[in-house]
Length: 207
Image (cartoon, rainbow, N blue to C red; front, side, top):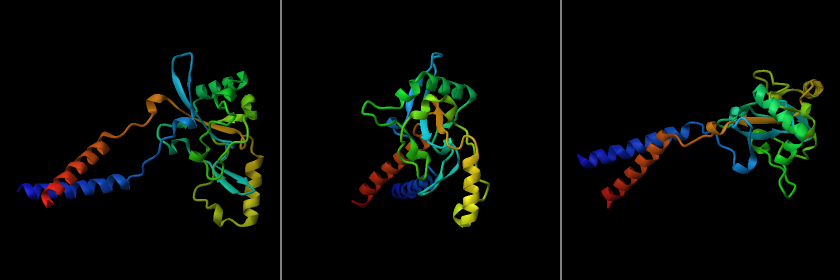
């Protein structure tokens, strides 16, 4: 009877493990890819410089960059009106530029987390111009659109339409409050604990 229970535990652990891996897991950003700002109201904000453009699709010489939604990563969101006002105030004071520039002159950014093609920012020059900063997209791709299936003429026409829209080249920032930072799910920890116990029992069973 005990051996049967152990075998059932092993089977269940593998089933639950496979289910847990089948569920998409949204990754968290590393600590050096965003900054945490404490406002005078005592609330802390995680701020990520997500992209140098503010369009879901943006045409470059090397191809089409896709900018992903803030919630692609756990806890992140588009800026609220208050957060956007805060961002623009930091820009006007020059504090935003210094916040995102390291001592060695490199930049703190999260481009790799939300862009297909953009990877390294060129500069923070536009940070001092508050109207060049945004969070919501200026242009969103139509539903079911597949860029790769468009003809060259359609691509060119669409590219011109996107580039002529105000705000498509704004620097994009996403926000998160520390309380929204992801923590390990208790169910996931339980599954792994059961799996370890089952594997240990299996070792004893077959020795």
